[in-house]
Length: 253
Image (cartoon, rainbow, N blue to C red; front, side, top):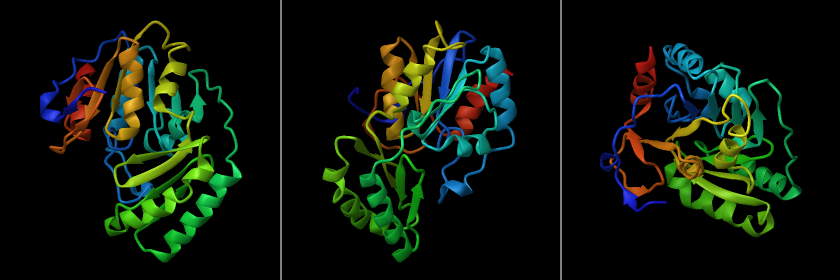
């Protein structure tokens, strides 16, 4: 990563080029973050804008999300190339799906404990996706420390197969091999992405792997943030929020 940067210190990205392979995060990038994953809702303009961009890129647009693909398709039903659960689900442009490795007993044990924690503490959300588990404390920020302690107590049993990925008011437990960067690398070996300049747009810590991947491949990385925060990022460019992302994509209309 580069040094610690504020969003204001990064320039706006260039206009979308038809020669790009475009990879877009969903929550916080195309759709506003919500208290719970099921409450997230897209703007009416989103799908027409995405379809237009997809057509102008010759289909070289993929959504890359921590959500399962079922959740991605609910928010942005392009039903084209997409990676869910940080690449554990991978749908190619021809519709072929990759298999998902089953979760280990250690992850199931943690999921059971997190569901118990959820039942005891209103505002805590345990999102059990099968191969990954996410604990959201957005509606109960005072429980962050207790949630973190519970998850970290399982850490030795989960390693080396799993890693803890922190994000915006949540902690996700996922396989080490599941990263948005690896999802990008795989797409770039498939049509219609082969030979194009990759561009990744995302808002959270989970997107840094995607930024690093496209940077390594000579592409562009765009950090989405509407807060005057400061953290390390590999991103080269900045957009201020979901509205700015949609407006940037809509320049092609």
